[in-house]
Length: 269
Image 1 (tube, rainbow, N blue to C red):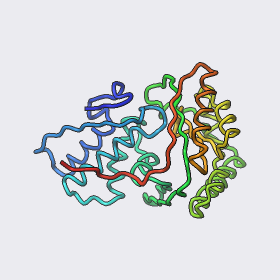
Image 2: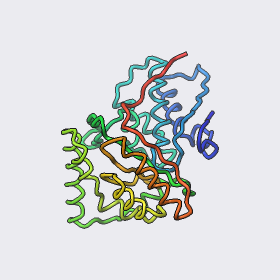
Image 3: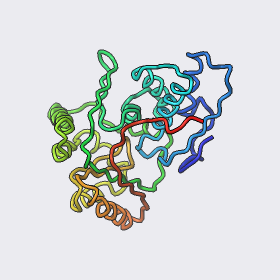
Image 4: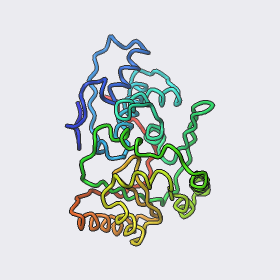
């Protein structure tokens, strides 16, 4: 059962659903076939808009199975199960959204020589304004967005992006919001994907002028995120985003939020 925004577009077939794929694999690996399962998903994350909707369902399923059946699966294995769900939306297993949904805060994912996750706590005043433009998105949008990326990258741009990535990590370690935002300046992926987002340049420019310290595409888009050092400026940036999209005759929704602490069990009945 699936409830919430965009639920009608999500397939109920377990093999085509991020939650169902995770459940099937855990059921098979732990011989849980003797049980009947009804998984009910209710969330307010619109699917296909670059906000990790599929990862949220996949992680919730893995965490719930582990807790209910006392499987004692360690974090690395649990994340591997959850990543199975990303095949339903992206066509491949990947861990960026999975790790964020599971751990919360800021997470570095290393896949070689072995899978490793490094979590760093977010500064308490770090504020995000997420903007979701109400536009149609293609099916398997993440896969489509990946195809928009360049196959070759100039060395100069790669060096710049690596430098920015290091700056972001240093900012989180130092709990320095300004340093984090100084590093949020993607010169490889953003230029390729912004063409898929109507009004991107206008919304970015006006958000930065209205108080945002940095601005980026959320996941594969079309949602975007403005980064601030105080919630007090959130409403102004949110209003600016809505006003800018309004002038383009595009509706949007905005959310003012802070980084979460990750997945957790609320109750077991």
